[in-house]
Image (cartoon, rainbow over all chains, first blue to last red; front, side, top):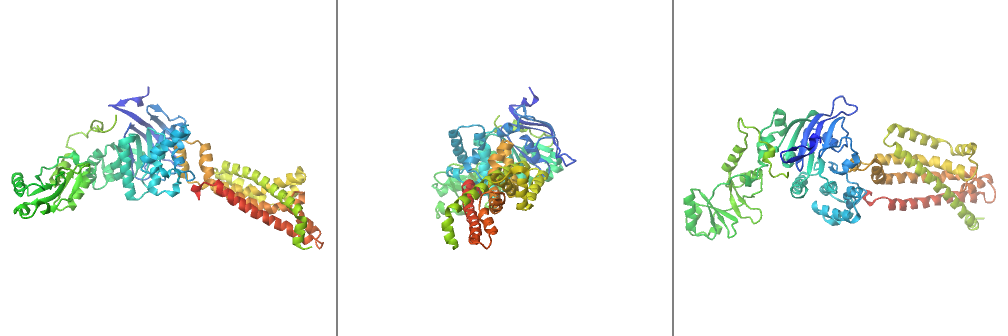
Length: 401
Length: 215
């Protein structure tokens, strides 16, 4: 039994790199120097660092597109450093920035590449192709198209579908969303995250130079310096709030606290108490609620509990104006799964400096977030003096074990 | 006798000549394609070896065809088909080899890397990815070679080879004779017609053997 099969807590090591080095023939200095790291099953680990730090070389050594000069690679506990590379690669999904679709093959044939090499029968291959097209949100009528007939974003989706075709437990992705426009990139990232949470739950090694992408996608991030030396390897939350040194701090760049906000969701924080009334209530009731709460505004909901209007004392002092026309419409609305970053953005542009939280499905009122709520949430994120950085494994219950 | 009358009179013979001409070109082309693609595949990733192969193939092309046919007989290939095919093959290799190397090198490295990353062996990469992608360039090379040796094949009459060289040589040797101009004209026009036929064949072949994804 090798050491690599050892569990840490509940979680199995999917990939273990042990003192991995690579020196290219014409260079004196190694591109990767004695890198050791463990990657657990089902997690997305992002390798991030400046150009030329060796992150791509590191990733390409996992499926031995680049053969290591020294060190060992273990996959699911098995030493694959000297295994047959073609066999090894068929069990590891591989997506590169340029995608590398085969231009002379149809989309279906592109996706079917690995299943066919593994000897799947025709029907199984065909239904898998349909299934994957659906998974990446493309119509099955695209089967017979050629890569040149697709947009950049669509090609990227096919690249991901092709890598997933034989359902490999591990995927390697080298800046897969690098070559598309920012809007498409964001959409692809969101889809990818949704996919990973709902269906894939694969072990993914993701390479990028973009710290924002790393923070968004990574369960853990390895920030690398020259020669693939690990500067910090931890959850994005910890890296943003507690960078180990100046290098990491510089790399995260300014606005680390704001980036941290994009990792928390509204449902994670305590919303503010706020008086609410219904549009069907009488003016007296509304005035009464306002007095009791001591707040200057009351939020009015419709019969389905959807937030409609804000009213203050002056709006309801007289019974003259009907409630559904009084005050201001409530437009700053966020969902419970919205990030604090987006919530803050909504609040800043709204006129009352607060946002109403609703549930995703029916839009029912859940609470109100104001600046005081967000500030106290930020307070809680700061690492406390003398306290150890939180153990990510204990904290990450949402990951599959 | 006018040229048209001559054509009507000699039609059967000319058709046989055309078939012989075409056959010798097609056979040579097939052999040259096999040699050119094989050499290209063996050398496209080794710049020094590719240089040597291309240099040799170019050198063959610089040898005057009369001389080369002479050498072919000199080394004991006899007369007729064998020396003709050997010489034509030699001339046809260069552009097929050059285009095979260029075509294989033009394949986007990202495509081969992703093929490799998916677990294709070197052979699978070559047969399933690189050669199909290089094919339009390779077939263009075969076409150029075909046109080249269609012309050179006329010289083969010198070593008793088949084809339109026969009427041309005969016409030249009887210059001033009754049908000498008609003989030369029929040979020349015959080669031109064959060239057109080849162009059409290659256009059709290229269309049906190239993936629609590459156009």
